[in-house]
Image (cartoon, rainbow, N blue to C red):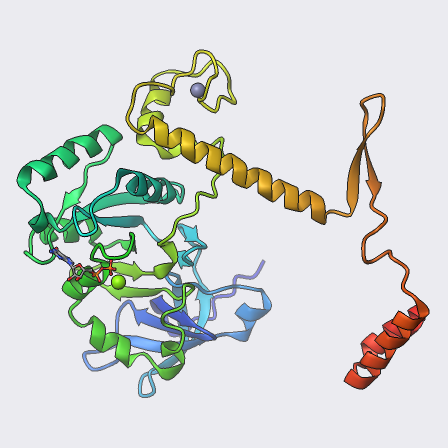
Length: 365
Ligand SMILES: Nc1nc2c(ncn2[C@@H]2O[C@H](COP(=O)(O)OP(=O)(O)O)[C@@H](O)[C@H]2O)c(=O)[nH]1
Ligand SMILES: [Mg+2]
Ligand SMILES: [Zn+2]
C-alpha cells in the first residue's frame, strides 16, 4: 500500500471551527512572528472522495498555505483519539460540567442527569460549582461532602469574586475540554473571563463562518491563555439519557465502586429486584439510578417499536409457538395503484420534466 503523505509544507494544525465547507485551523507552529496563526481552509477533493469528514478538534496537515490571504487546504486528517457526535468534536479529553450553587440553586436531580450524560461519553469529567460568592461557607461544605459521597470532587469557583479560577485553569491546561451545563450557571461568563479576546476573535470569523454561529450543530474551540482548547457548545444543554440500560450503572461512580468490590449473582443484572445484587443499596443516588433506568428502558422499547413498524416483515407466532417472519402485504410499495392514479403520476412527472422518473413510471404503466 502506498501511503499518501502529500504534505510537502509540513504544516500542522487543529480545526477550531467548521462551517459549510470552510475550516478555521489554528497552526501549531506559525511560520514567523508576523505570519498568521489561523488559516481559513478548504478540504482537498481527495479527502471528499474517500468520505473523510473534518471535525472541530481534528489534527490536520495543510497544503499550499497562502499567508497573505490567510488561506490553505486540508490535505490529511490524523486518526482521532476520541470522537463525539453531539456535539461534534474530535479528540476531546474531558467535559467540564459547570453548575451554580445558587441562582439557579443547585438541584441534585438535574445535576445527576448531567453527570450521567457526561459519564456516558467515556471522556474524563471535571465538575465545577460556580457562584460561591452567593452561599455561606457551610452550604458549600455540605455540597462538597454530599458530592464526595457521589464520587466527585468538584472545583469551587466564583467568576464574580475571581476565586478558584487558577485551580480550574490548571485542570484545563493542554487539553481539549467541552464546556457543558444548564443555562444561567456562568458558562459565557467563564469564557469571557478565561479568554479575554473571545469577542474580538469571534467577530474576526469570516462572513461564511459567522452565519451559523448560534445553531446547535455549531461548535467553536477557544484557545486558553495557558494552553488548551475550550469548546463552547449549546448542543449539550438538555441531556437525553439515550444510553443502553445495561450500561447505566457504569455511569454512577457509586455503582462502579460496588461492582469493583463484588459481583451480582446474574451477569445481566439491572440492579432492581434481582437477588444477590451488589449495586442495590443504601446510597443516595440509587433512586436516581432506578428512575434513569426506567427512562432508558422506555426509550429503547420505543425505538424497537418504530423499527418493527418500519420493517417490511412481520413476526408470526404459529400455534406450535414457532416464530416465523412473513412479508407485510399492505405496504405502499406493493399496493396496486389504480390506472387513474398512474395517469396522474405520469402527468406530474411530465410537467416536472424529470425524464428518468418518467421512464421508471412508464415501465410500470
Ligand atoms: N453572583 C454571581 N453571579 C455570576 C457568577 N458568574 C456568573 N454570574 C451571573 O450569572 C448570570 C448568568 O451567567 P451566564 O454566563 O450568562 O450563564 P450561561 O447561561 O451558563 O452562559 C449572569 O448574570 C452572570 O453575571 C458568579 O460567580 N457569581
Ligand atoms: Mg451562555
Ligand atoms: Zn445487580
